[in-house]
Amino acid sequence: MKAPIYTKVPHVQTGVVEPCYTFNIEFAEGESAITFIADDSSYISLQALQKHVVEQITWWNEFMTHFLQVSAKHFSKPYTVAQINKITKHALSALPATEFPVQVSCIPASIQISGGVFLVQWNAICIPIVIDIPVADDTEESAPTIPDDNIHHVMEAVEELNVADVPLDENTTELELDTPTKFYDKQKVKEARLKAKLAMYKAQHQMSAYYDKYGQDLTDSDEETSDEESSDEDVQL
Image (cartoon, rainbow, N blue to C red; front, side):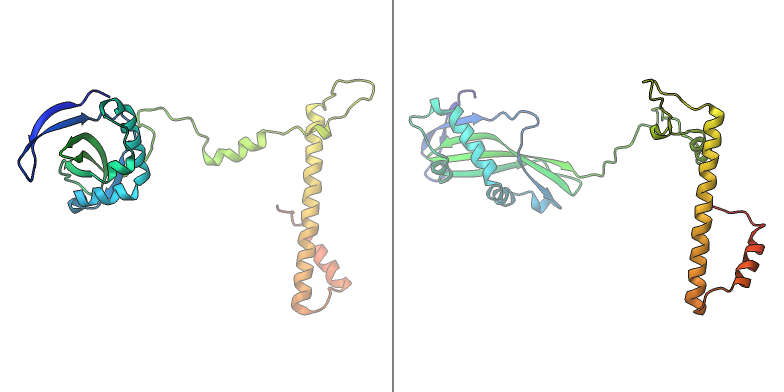
């Protein structure tokens, strides 16, 4: 921290000229500050600032601790944050905001010590709160997509190899893969078995529904008639 600027100013009450020491505070970009939301201009006031300093007292104590550490050589003896808080006053300078709500960030711009008063001059920066949706730039090339009506065909063209289906020769460590024709026929058999299981499940479900509705099982003649009528129908998944 730079050395304080020495001047002489009259006391606000007595008018007696007294020495004044002004420390200019430099905040790096990205450093935390006292922040709050203002819905209109009445929220941006010294009273509001003092209220939020009390609510965010941890931030304030950390700031004052750091200030007293880096400027210790300019004081006749070490001071504590508690001692300084008893003589601290605040002043606020804020640019008027034209749009609301805004996020108000208050940072100490300078500290002035004179007449036994520790005056902190704050600057308030108001940033309008707007909706920001992260979307890709229209000029950027988007990844090619597969039309929905072609997805089914693409999935059918991709076969997943199950290691358990690959025959192994006990006398060799190499895998022996089925020929494409045999693999295709095997898949057809699996599909036929699946359709048969679904058909059996469907018949059992319909029989249970019939029994729940009429309270009796189908007779042999009913089952034969039903089988004849359904023999010409294809099983649908």
